[in-house]
Length: 200
Image (tube, rainbow, N blue to C red):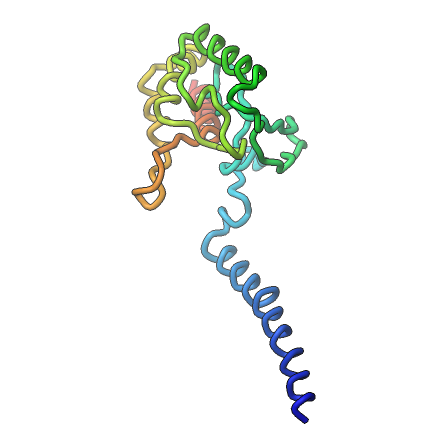
């Protein structure tokens, strides 16, 4: 009798744990996310005026035009284009500080920034650990604002206003540093230019 009771318990406990951790808990998280945080739960996808997805506010993208703020360098290469999807891969280059390839990339990046009259500060030269960082520092954004303002033919104070608007504060007001979300800032620049053309 004791053997049967122990066998039932041995089956029942893992079954209950599986039900709790694989079914009930994920369902609760899914419902809470979809009800209270639908934008974040669905990937923080940013849409344009045509209601087309242009990217996630949580994942960095490559911007090369002078009309846009450039994000942090990344060893991750994303597919480009409207129908392309990010690969979802993250990771750093894992090159040692003594690696000549790393030094060459840093020197090239620094020289390119100097050619653009931009001070080569850390987050415009070094890649982030994940390669997916969607933010740059306020200092990195301020360094690029003159180039962007000149390329778009707008006043510097318009750019500063947008930088301030799309700066995310510290997590829980104490952790980390404020950062500027590049995708949201660059889309706001395009939106502002579109509205300006519509009003002419």
